[in-house]
Image 1 (cartoon, one colour):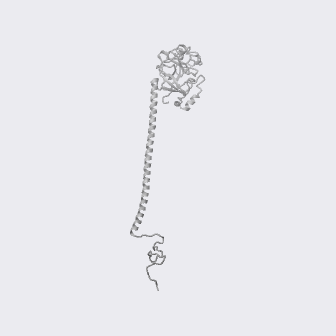
Image 2: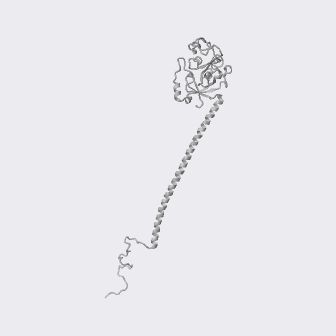
Image 3: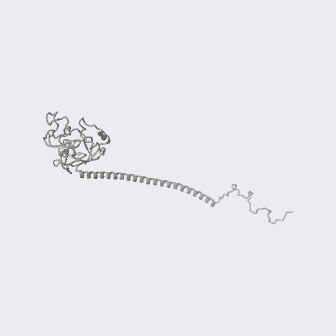
Length: 312
């Protein structure tokens, strides 16, 4: 006979309801342990999540695109900055060039104001004034009448070596008596000027043989005579200075480099030299070649030519 059914469950029983076919109380579709909620609300939330992830991806792409745009903008800014820097460099360079040109002009104007001669600087091209002047020296020249020395000849402003030696006018220039003058040979302004010392003055038609240093007239022993034997420029064709390079053996007039130098041919008197700075004007190779010159002929070194030095 069966025991009465009092609604009690056997010991160890589970009062939780069970669905048929699910002995373990699991959902039939939850074999993986997850519950798949296919309700409309849950599905919409899932799709919303997926949409959110899509928006994140889209935002990321957009962010990267915006970042790339910022990079391009930075590159454009950097390019503009570089262009501005280059323009600034050119402006600075042009400013420096203009300043340098103005400075040179001011210095040139000052030198001209002091010297009264243009150009006021000449470069020595040959060694005939050695050792007082060397090849490549830059020499400052002043108008001869601006500050004439004591004993200057007849208002010319030039003091000759003879005047310095025979009078009280102790007029030493470049370690010897007498002015060193820059002159145009035969008054020809197209030729390169010569820079030599003024030795003495001769008058027109003067026989200056007796005045001359016999060592400085070479083989000649008289004024006049036959053309081949006569002392050149004697008698003097006109009044002027007899000149000579300190390192030369003969007068310029004996070597027929020029007639007696008229006062109108004188460019100015040499005042100060700056060693080797004239090589910039002469160019280095030419300067060195001139410095190594041994002279022209057995009696001398040829004329010391003074190359105009503006633009040095």
